[in-house]
Image (cartoon, rainbow over the protein chains, first blue to last red):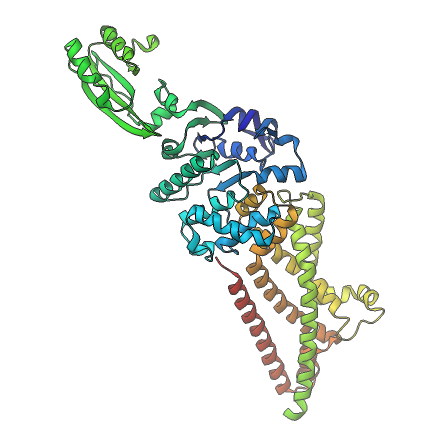
Length: 334
Length: 219
């Protein structure tokens, strides 16, 4: 649905240049929620703004629903933008218009006749649960409600694609959860493809099918969230399961084991202990709900150097677990 | 002079002052709005970047603002005569310097009010596929309305001050009355009355401006 090829955007100020987006390739499949995770300054906002050409990339291609946006100009570009909804961190609502007036605005821009607007506005407000606030001004409603107005407004043109620019970053955790739920619901019910950028792990965890981690203008890793989490060395996994730097005592092996499903389904700790007659220390871990599956990561300590635990590690890998060994000697043999 | 003699003069002078300030305010509002919008649009980061035009316009506005009104008024007498067909004395000809003096003043205030509009709102409208015209009329001007109105009341008050100066140079109005009778003929009551009237007019303009701005603001 969204295809970005070799996208590059450089900012110049005086003789200083900053490459905000550096040769990024990105494919968002129809109907999926794709999250780009990164710190501020990673270039993710620029990347997103290049998708509807709020920023013009220096090179690369941007295809949305099969249309090459960079080839469009003037009216054709405005037309294409109407098929791409966008929601913003600070909502971008017109303070001088009521909630209903804000939702009507894109309809005016699209040239929807006045008589049809009211019905469509009511429909959109119902969709986001704001019917009784239709007459309120943005200053009179909460942040979460403002973002709902933003979402209703973004959906006015029945877009196939929704771009979300840190839509929940200005909201408290509970409101964030309700907005994410709404986005997930719209994604499922309307088949809406969502490309979002965020610096919050929570957002990726809750609603993203696929994700990319962006740093210094580049994608560090990218793919389906569950696959990324199962990959050793994944930054996404490290962010989601924040375990401290391991403190490996001499004569022991510290292993991070990532598993899918309930840990109860895979009693690897007890099976390891039983099979090899060793003591397994649990150092830390967490289980997170990712989409419809649970993914967990457990850090365990085995007696003996990694060399002595080769059979044990193989046993874990054969059980289909992702195994990361900390310590020095086996670092290269992972 | 008795109050019976003073009243007709006061009434006449008030009408003249209101006429000069009112008409020049209307003209200033129209042209000032236009120049202010152009200043914002042609800015390097504006919707219609024209750095050269922007620089020139900014320079003209600054020159207009740096000239004291008294000097501006005298300096542009030839231009005033050109506009009015040779006349430079009386209330109507003074509309020319008043408007010329008011435009750059209001244009800057318009510029400030438009820059106050959150950039995110403009970005949102652009992302919706709005045209530049729609962004100017439906986003910038509309969102900035409270600021535009406050700016206008400040401008009108400045124009009322200018009319007093214009009056001294033969434009009529309360300023003329204060100089010709209050000052030169030592009529303390005339002076007092003109001062009080000017204060009342200024306070009224400010109050109306504040009220309208508050009504328009939904922040």
